[in-house]
Amino acid sequence: MCVVVSFYCNLSWARKPVPDHAARTQSGLLVSQPHAEVRETPAAPHASVSTRLNSIFRTEGLSILLTNREDALRVRDLSAGYYASSEAPGHILPQIGALRSRLQNRGVTFAFTYKGEAMADVGGGISRGMDYVHELTLQTQFDLGRLFGFTGWTVHTLLMERVGREVSHDRVGDYNISLMEVYSLSGHSVAHLTDMYAQKSFLHNTVDLAFGRMALTHVFATSPLLCSFMMTCSAPVAIKLDAGFSVYPKATWGGRVRLRPTRDTLVQIGAYSVSPLNEDISGWAWAGEKSTGLMIPVEFAWQPFFGPRKLPGHYVLGFAHDTTRYADNIGDVPAGSAIRPHGGEARDTFYLEADQMLYRKGGASQMAGGYVLAGYIHNTPDVSVISDEFYVGSSLLGIIPHRPHDRFGVMYSYYRMSPRTELGQQLRMDAGMALGVHVNGPQTHAAVLEAYYGVPVYPGILVQPEFQYMMRPGETAHIPNAEVVGLKVIGTL
Image (cartoon, rainbow, N blue to C red; front, side):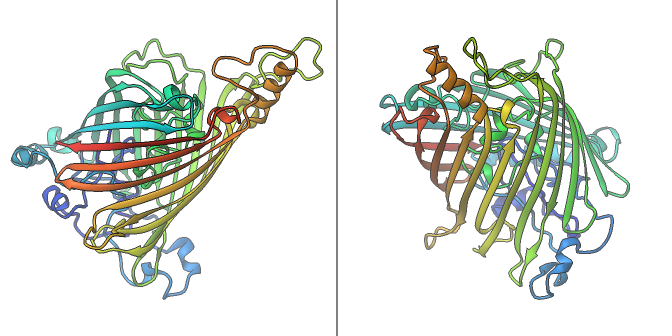
C-alpha cells in the first residue's frame, strides 16, 4: 500500500516553516511511498513534528571538499523535502478536507489508500495469463504533544489488507524474485498490523529515536526513489529475501537512533529482533513469534546539493550484522561427497546506494526533476538466497511537454544466487538426486529490466503502465525469458 512518506525530508539546514497540509497537497508536494517511515513532514500521517534534525556541528561535512560554485549549501539554506512522488497529488474526496484539518489540529492525521496491480505474461515464462493483487492501507499518526501534552512524542500505526496472486509464481516460473510489489513476501493478509511504534527527538533536535513494531527497511537500505518501481519497493530484492532485514509489511520489535553530525551527513544505527519471514503473518501474534537473533544495521549518508540549481544527491554506505546462525545453503549432499556442509554461520550485509538529480523540472520539491540511481548489495554467500545484486536506473519527471507531473522510470537489476546453493544443486543433480520443488537446474543468476510511466489522471489517482523483461526465470536457462506487461493504480482517499 502506498503510504504518505518523506525520506530524509526537511534536511537539518532547513530553517524555513514547513507548508501546511493543504498547501502541500495543492502544490503536489504531498507524496507517498509504501513502507518508508514518515519522519520529517509534520503534515503527513506518519510524520513527527519534532524530527527535523538539527546538525551537531554547523559545517558542510563532506561538501566542504567542493568549490563554492559546486556546493549549493554555501549559497543558502534549503527547506524543500527529499522524497519522490509515487502517487498523484491531492485526494479523491476533497470534501473531507475540513475533517482532516480539524483532526490534525487536535493531533491526529490519517491516510487511506488503495493500490492495485494487474500483470500479465505475454511472452516466455511458463504460461500466458494475468494475475491481480491489491492492498488497502490505513495509516495514522498521533501527536502526543497535542493530545496529552507529551511534547515531541508521536505514535505511528499502520493497518493493511492484501489479497491476490503473484505473476512470478503462476506465469513466469520464478519463486525468488517477485515481479509484483503488493504480493511481496507476505501473500494474503487481512487487517495485518504493519506498524506500531513511538518516535521522539532529544538534545535540541539533534538526536531522533524510534522504537516499537516496525520494518527495518523503513529507514535502512532504502531510497526515496525505489518505491516508484514495482520490484524494488521497499528495498532491493537481495535484502528482502532473507529474514534478517524485516521488510514492509513484515514488522518486528526494534529501534533506531538517528543523528546528523554535520549539515550534509546523517548517521543511524539500529537493533531489531530477527524472526522467520513466514511467521506472524497477521502482525498481531507477538507472543508466538520466535526470535532467532538480533540484526544490527549501521548506515552513513552524504546528502549534498550541487550547483546553483541545488541538485540534491543521496549517497549511502551501510552494513548490517545478523547474529542468527543459519544453515549452509549447500543443503543435502550425496553420500561420500568430499564437500560437506559448514556449521551454522551468521549473516552480514554490505550495501552502497546512490541517487543524483541531473536536472530540475519546475516545482518546489527537491525531487522535481530527473534522477539517476544505482546500488550494490553483497550478502554472506553461504547463508543468503542472493549473494550479490547490482541495479542501475533513472527516474525522470516531465519528459513529455505539458506533462510536468508525469514520471518515467527504467531500471536494470542483476542477481547472483548464492554460489553455495549452486554447488549443492550441482552435486545433487550429478548424483541423480531431486533438486527440489520449482528448481529446474543449478541456479546461478537472473536479471530484470523494468520500465514504467506514471500519470496522475485525477487528484488522488495515479495510473502507471508497467513493462518487465525477466532474463533467466528461475535463475536457470530452462525457462524462456519472460515479457510481462501490466497496470498499477493508486488511489488516495
